[in-house]
Image (tube, rainbow, N blue to C red; front, side, top):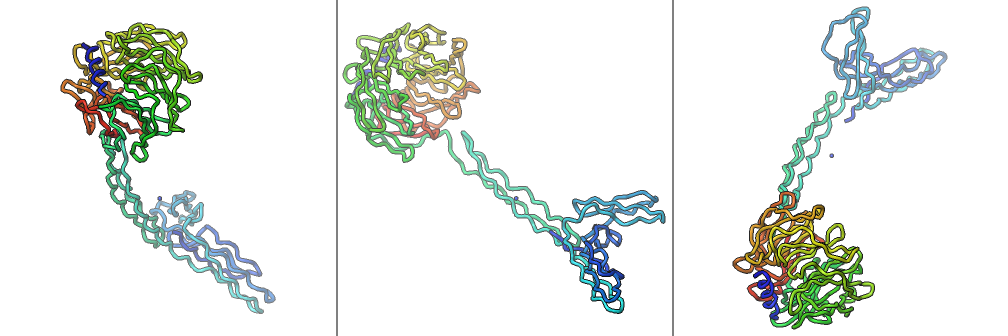
Length: 539
């Protein structure tokens, strides 16, 4: 019955992120022509309330010499000492210095604490210049005036608000915006300075919501078509070729540009065809082979995107439609199976782009159409479907097919997708007795198929597209009640399917192409046996 369903579909589709000032210097006398030295770090008053002093000024002039310059103003000393402690001669206790300094004072033999000694100058204090000594006279020169006491440091400015958090995006739903910055700490308090107080950061705004898992319409094709081909070009555009337009077979070619969301006419094929294959070659050109236009076709042609023209190439050895075409690591293309009156084909052939010719290779172990061909990471090709539950592998080096493990159930018109793990997902199809929702995985390492989660809906002729996040989009096709618009996602990590948004239109016999921006282009197909020109994007 599966073969009859497949054949009937073919026949139907044939229709056509404070500084302080310096401390004071002392007045010093009896200095002779000596220049003032720099302010010492050691304070001349208890550290609780004094600033460091400048070194001595000039001594008493004899014979009228000039008084030396006053010492440079001392730096601001510690703001306060630590709490009183019992004075034991020789013992030292810590005293309070500015932030970033360490200080101690030592108990003298007289039983009193000495000066507070800070190991570094206060970072907030600037040096005050000592005044010059008075000119010498026959009398003693007056002592040089030291620098005035330094004023207290001013408080730090309030910190600015933290920036508002921005919203994030996720693969399936947008993340909420992160919170605003935490409350900023206040400024450091200096002597007599005011405390800086940073304001709390404003609350973060909610991130902009980016919808995922939805289909949205994009520009329509220039012609309605089904059973056509869609090929992603190196430019990022998608080449749509051939197909059946409802009343006639299409020879037209058009390009979809994701940047503007429109389709434009891009030439014609040399032969109108549908149920053909299109394969992107290493050169960037596209091989169009076989198909149907009233009869099965053996002709092939190569479309050049740079010139927008298609030219005939060598013919296949056998005319065929509904076959598979797989680009091999060597750059050659494996054409296998398909249909040609009066039946299904087992033979295969290779297209060599260097010579533009087809040559026979080994035949499959079973004749097949409505099957799938998947290039494995090993370079072998997995062929499965149409003939019971059997599957086989094509070995390019040997040019032959060999049997591998069998599927758990017969499938035809199903979907097959190579996963990042190297396994192949098989989903849906027709068992010959019923439409299927079941799915299974083929492991090339063992050559065995094992069951995985089932789809949410039974589907025949669905599309399966590996997304950039590693999940697989299964969409459309035919169900028990006819054409489907629903779609679902397979998660290889969980081994389960979950519903996602539905297409804007029910579709079967359409194309699904992963674009370079991560979206999926859905184009054409048929809805209730009416050929479609509409297209939509999944994101």
